[in-house]
Image (tube, rainbow, N blue to C red):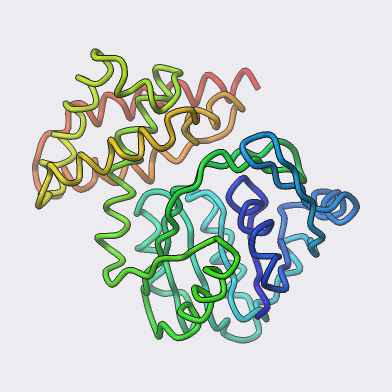
Length: 302
């Protein structure tokens, strides 16, 4: 099976490194320079920063993507989706299978009108850090959940079976909305708090004062999303905090690097939900504005 991966960030590199063990992988990068560096050096995978392996994959600039692969995985940031969709609609034929791996849920509105036979959405709980253009560190194993958004499940089932054989399992979920809501809740609690406090994920539960802020934020999220079984959902957030305790959140990394964050797709989505239901979202709005302020300052400095 031929696999295309669009995006050479931490998740794109992680998927390319693992999937190359069982598939013919082409990694599509933002620039020709990035592709050339990966083609020259290969792709290095670090296991927790220590053990290192090297694989050879083909890398091409995204402008060269034609959608011919049997499955294309879109592993870019939420705010980069618009350019991807423009490329999809410009193709000469309809691509067969697209898998979108974005944080937040704002992109769901954009996927409805994409011309593709089958569309899947997924959530990734693996910890990964991009060390340089061709090196990724796998900081912690987690779940990869995938659900059908439109079309048929057949290709993704075959893909999942092959992934299980290379110790990179994919779990198929029945309901894409509930699957993404679970990830959204974790992102909405962990990302903004760790980014504002500049701490690792685990400190949210080991520091009693930070933990109080976690509980207060979760309660507001639960109220806006009308969550069933909120205690179970809260335990899921704590489980992720513990499992990724030594990791920095993606939002904190983005701020430190002077990059744009995905706060609009995460807390921005929740603010829109609150407005539609005429509910107040005091904590969520405050954290949203704080992150936007930090984002503006860091991007100006960098």
